[in-house]
Image (tube, rainbow, N blue to C red; front, side):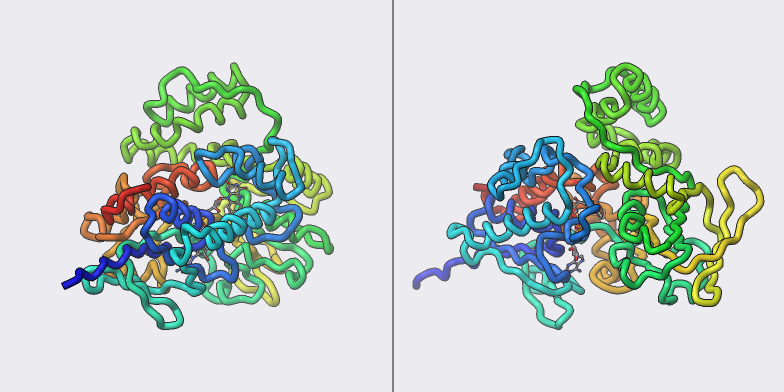
Length: 452
Ligand SMILES: Cc1cc2nc3c(=O)[nH]c(=O)nc-3n(C[C@H](O)[C@H](O)[C@H](O)COP(=O)(O)OP(=O)(O)OC[C@H]3O[C@@H](n4cnc5c(N)ncnc54)[C@H](O)[C@@H]3O)c2cc1C
């Protein structure tokens, strides 16, 4: 009797932003018989949260020369720009919308490549559940349809911000409270005083979108620190000195900054950060997060110089003020809000009224806090757990998701910002392009399909 040919393995990649798209591409290229089902709930595949914007002031915060999607083709993005008739210098900061076009062109190439014909299936829906079924994993989509896969990669991106501390329940349902900063709409946002909770790069995006129209913007964060600006940099040698603890690393970084400049010192340590992070015990990682993170973030995640200049302009014209303080209480008041906060270093709290609030406080780190959707489903099944630092998912060195029992959940992998507790640097393209290739290799190994 003729033997029935074995069905090719299927991998579900949930989330079609940069991480999901690139994981799918690496899987298709590394494993010639694998079928990939890429699941995305947003209208357009490939753009994710960061690259869906069409706002001209929303620029990449990484130079064009370092934004290739592929680790082994460093000029890939710049070559794409040149082929598209818009050659840009390596130092240029291109718009994020343009980068989204690049990612969508990669998707088109993949779909039309004859060697991948029929192996990339696009599922335009939200995945709401993943459960074991007949030795495989069954993915349920919001519409109710299901399909089975041999492995599932979670590429869900950053979680939305946590509700502001001290906010009364009616605040969260108030029409002038914007919980998701990426949904802020300058056309419909009220005029008057607007509170932006947080002072990171998300705040910068929102401030540039909302500025004008007679609005006065106040950004409030614990330290009131704002990202520094990029500037032309010289060579960035690796620092000499101990990196054994956060305190020692800071000393080494300061000494290096005196010698070569702070930007070069931070850039010089970047190739080492994942190894350093992995070498620190949990207690040291915790210490870093508690004491050094805000300073690291503003020096590490810099703004394009034109954006920094626009932001300074808003501060000088008093359209934007940045305050350091701790939010204590938020209550609905008329059409807007009464907000009480304690300015940093002061004892007496201050109460001010705002017409609207936008929560720019950064992504929530706790996947166990999700009350609905895929993460809540996986948590209920014990398939995942929060990492001990509260930065995202607990994963092992092969990016396998660790379940409530402390063991890898069979067939379940994760990639992208939710894995940052394991590696620290899993936020930006220069890190994610390596990690997506890595997770594709780990999945192929688990399915015992030979990488090409
Ligand atoms: C505003 C902003 C600007 C940034 N700028 C830069 C930059 O200039 N340079 C840089 O290197 N990095 C930048 N980053 C970092 C950015 O996070 C990474 O570059 C990268 O885009 C992360 O991609 P991702 O796919 O992991 O996450 P995301 O882009 O968040 O994509 C996750 C996708 O998963 C989908 N999804 C989630 N859950 C489900 C589900 N259950 N079912 C179906 N789909 C689901 C979402 O709809 C989303 O499209 C920026 C980030 C932000 C937020």
